[in-house]
Length: 437
Image (tube, rainbow, N blue to C red; front, top):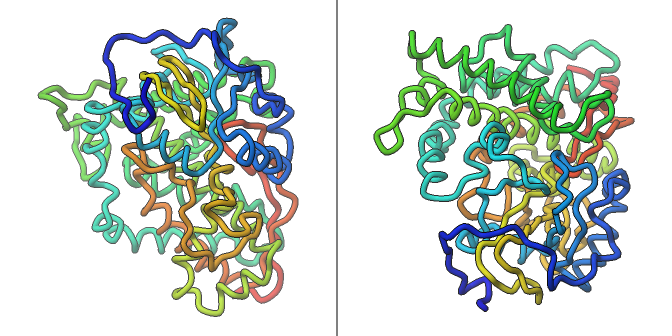
């Protein structure tokens, strides 16, 4: 048996864990739907106990799985900052190719929805490299004027109104348009992209589910995005332009072009990762600034000089992606627990970003917090968020416009989505107040 530092990747096929030789399921049940219906503060109380006494715990199979499996034995829950970084960075022991959700999904569904998120190197690296040029600091500077212009236009659209839905009218708009700009999505398809991307991660929410099963909701949303991608692919093959979709259509990996399905899967992943996460960071940050007016005052005393450090606290506080999974391919020890090939290992990012051994007073929203090694973009390694600099640029531009032009704007009455994957505000009242400029 090896420790995580010594583990090496074996290529023989490994079997899913059987549940043999595992401890009893932990009494703090992270798999219960009722756990995820609690407030973030209530969940944090449970995470705090786990961090202190059993940082890696054995959990029963998650309730309301996308594709329930009667043979699923459960998973290891990883809640400490250090352990999450270990799992994220040791990609010889913990792999992504079995998927990133709690449950094991059929291969076709993985390929349809998770693209290179559910890949390992070398294929992961080759596909990631195809698009990484669109997210370099140089490229972000090229689109900075567009980001700022769109942010100003969004705030223009709410000026003069007393109350708006912050999520729909403000937070969703900038990331949706910037994603669509990157891929060259025409204006008449942009709302379809936004709605479908939101549905991909809403498989537990009753408003979205209706009478449908969770897998039906996800598949339908993915198919809608694939259909849009196919339209774009056909258009770019006939008339190439200077956008990311054209780059994907014309690119080759090991001498082979990507097929329509591979491009569509990448489009699905980027539509979700590139829109929902920034939307939610904006929404939770506006709510936090309303609840902590002294932090807003501090920021506005020197916005340009303080926004860079403040953004890191926005991201830590929001932690929009709550869970990601890896699968062990080598026997190892983590947090004093023996983990064997086939075991599922789930990382709980909000817990890691509230780890008392890393963050002083983690329960306090403090914009001057530094250093701030939060896990909002993941725990590092090859899957570290590709669009992190673009997200920060969008957040900076949006909050500059909001906080200067709507100085008395306040967020109220958030309505949360049922989810064990994305921390999501569906709707939130935003009162613009007096003093609009």
